[in-house]
Structure formats: structure tokens, C-alpha cells
Length: 324
Length: 263
Image (cartoon, rainbow over all chains, first blue to last red; front, side, top):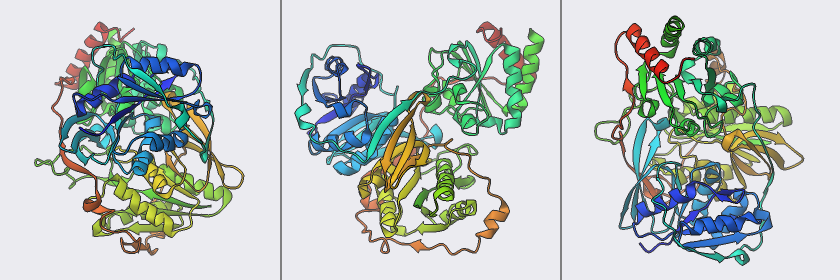
């Protein structure tokens, strides 16, 4: 294909994000011979380490350093990308809170197609790119087609494009900092407030009884607590439980909550969105209970029970108590 | 402050089992329960709370079929002052950019300081707010979970970022913000509230009213097209335990013991 491909490298504290090696895999699904350019934007001493890391994965790295870019403020980075990317460029971004901030507006400004939260890439036919997305909280998949001859911004879901075998790309770093130019934005980054640590640290627990929307009402919380107590476990939860203020933020498992590494994970009334599963690491034994047999959680669980949690869990608690 | 909130009527995916039609053209919609997109509902609540504090008015706009009126009315029952329906056959088949073009045109017709959308809707694209901002050339912030009105023309906002951390920014108005769930506790809407606004006239704007041509919106203007819906080939998936509740719980307790799940 004629269009040049680019990959936005997220980084923090002088280290490239895991998405750096996933984006190159995604680029090769678009064109097997793709030689995408890694775009590294930031400031400070750590930036060269990020560039060196990117050069191990990408044949070419563009470095843009400027003190004002020490924190990735999408409102500064979007106009910069708009300026430095060539016409018709195809840019791959990770579908993270940064990608969601910068991507949609960038596609408009570049007059390019926007393909958000892509989980699969079928390939390019002529100028038409065919990709896979999920809708309805992962309950249905869809193919999208877009003419990308005028360029594209593609945000890629984490974990969907496994990195290829490591082989050093021996890439060249081009310092393009002189092209940064004037940076001004009507949104100013102030600070990052760290999430509060709650009364229990669910990241250290081996057994989690995790609850979701299926519990329906706050009054039903004891149903989960009794099971957790019987098992010697701790109660964690998915996002809707925190949104509804039943449990504190420190109990939430997911990309916008805690990353946990239990041995055993009970997902009770949790649909299993990718944001939730993104917080579950270390390959635990997963038991899912959900009344919806289509819930995505059944795709990732080891064992499933199709049942209403409020009917099933008290029965399970009884059985656990008897077994002790 | 004049606030426009963009809302969408969606199948409630927490309440529905979504199934794909045999020919892949759509999901089976006949028996679905529809409601206002959850993120949008938080956005409306936030707008109402801001206006309660600093004055102004809240307008709720929705694009779509005549059924979209029911969600606009529901949000007006919550306390939004005005409704707006953006309805035209020419809008059908719009991609994200087309939807954003319709909303941006509606924003230009008004005199808004702040436009709110939900962070995402049923298609999980999380794209419309950012596109509206770009079309208007207004600043944008996504995944907003805190809004504080500062001195004239500036908002102090929090964005929910990875790990549940909060990124604090100051943003100049007019601006577009996409709202994350959990920012507030949306009020309950009762039947009485709905009845109160049942007779309120909701203006309808068509493509011509918004100055939109066929090349910008609808199927013709869509650069991104949905080819089909499908059910992905099932992976290994979970072993679904069958039998009576007694049999299932017995089996499960054995498994949990073996895996170290019962201490």
C-alpha cells in the first residue's frame, strides 16, 4: 500500500507501554510488509530510552521532544500530529484513555476514517480496510469497512494483537523536535491524583468473590459477603457497583480500577467487559455465574453456571459452609 | 451557563440478551428493552446540577427515529429545560463522523457554553464527543468524572485514567466533555415526572434546518460502513455446569477446594 503507517508509542517513566509491540502486529495485519514509523512524543531524560526501545521494534522512530509535552495532553498532541503526519497517513493508537482523548478529533482534523477499539483486522482489499469490532458490551461482533485512501486513525484494543517474536528492528531514530513549533492549548494539565487505597488491598488477595450488576440492589450485598466469609475470601466488584456507590473504588477490578492476580476469581453477575477483564491478570481459575448465557464472561471463564446470582449464591454459600 | 447534552436511545445491554439476525444485517431488535444510554444519563444529571449551582439552562438533544423522543422526554422529566429532536431520513446510516456533523450543526444553531456527551454508547466507539469538538474547533476532554465551575469561562475537570487515577485539567469554555459513569448519582424519574412533561412541545430539526447536505451525513456521507453483525466463533469457553442446583453447587465446591478457593 502507498500510505505510510505510523504507530503512537505510549510511554511512562522512560518505558514504552506494552501496546508498542502490539501496534506493529496490528500494522502487519493491514499490510504484511508494513514498516510503520514509531512516533515518540514527550520530554526529559527518559525519552531517549523510549526511542531506543521503539527502535528495537520499529525500523524508524520519529522523536518529538519539548518540555511542554512532559505530560501527554491530548489537546497539545492532536494539533502536533495533525501538523507532522503526511497526507493520507494511517495512524495506529492504543485504545486507552489517551487514545480515546486524541483519536476521534484527530481523524476529523486529518479528514481520515476513524476505526475505534479494533479487536481484529481482516486486511486490506484495494483501498478498503476491513476490521472487527465489538458492540453491546461484547455481546455482538461486527465488521467495519472503510476506504482508507484518504488516511485513517485506528485505535487498537489492548491484548488483541499479540507481539511477534522479538527480533531487533535496528531502527533509526530521527529527532524531529525542531518541528514541534508553538504549542498552545485551551486545556491545561494540572496534576494526577492517585486513586485512594481502601480498607482492603484486593491486589494481594488469592481468592476474590467479585460482584457485578447482576446483584441488582445494594440490599443484596450480604449475599456476596456471606459467601466470601465462608470461603475465606474478599469481596471485589466491577464498575457499576462502584458507580452506584455500593462499594468503594478500591474494590473495583478493571482497567479503571485495580489490577488483581488472584488464584481463584468468582465473577458473580458480571458480564465480563474487556475493561473489567483487563484488570484480571495471572491466569486465575475463573468461575462465572450469570443469568445471561450470552455474557462474554463465559468466553473467558473456566467454569460457568447459568443462573440468577441471587438464587444461586446463597445455595453455594450453604454448600461451602457444610463442606468446611 | 447554557449546556447542550447529546443523548442516545439504545438497547439496554444489561437487560437484554443480544442476538444477531441470521443474515447478519442487524441484531434482533423486536423484543429489546430500550432506554437512554447510561453514560448520557449521567451527563444530563451533571448538567442539571451545574445549572442548579450557577444558573442557565439544559437542553437535551437526540438524533434518530421518532422513538428518540421518549428518551428526550425522560431526560426532561429529570429536570432538563428544553428538548431537541434531530430527525431526518437523510440521517440514516450515518457513521460516527456523520452523527458528529449533525450534532455540531445543532450546537451552532444555539448559544452553548458547554456540550456534554456520554463517554460511549451501545457501539462502544467513544468517538462522537471528540469529533463534535474537532468540528467546532472547541477544546475537548474525554472520560470526565468531575466538573467544577471556576472563574469566568474556565472549568476544572477530572478525567478518569488507568488504574482509577484522576487527571485534573483546566479547560476553557466553550468546550465539549464526554462524561464517565459514576460522576454523580442520577436522580430517579417517576411516572409523575414523565407525565408533567408529556405535553411539552419538542422542536424537530431536519437536515435542511441544520444546513447539512447529503454528502456530509447519512449512508452517502459515511466513510466507515458496518458490513455485518456476526457471532464470533466460540473459543473453548467455560465448562457450563449442568444439573440440579444441588449437583452444581457440590461440583463447584469440589472444584474450588481443588483450586485453593476455599480456605
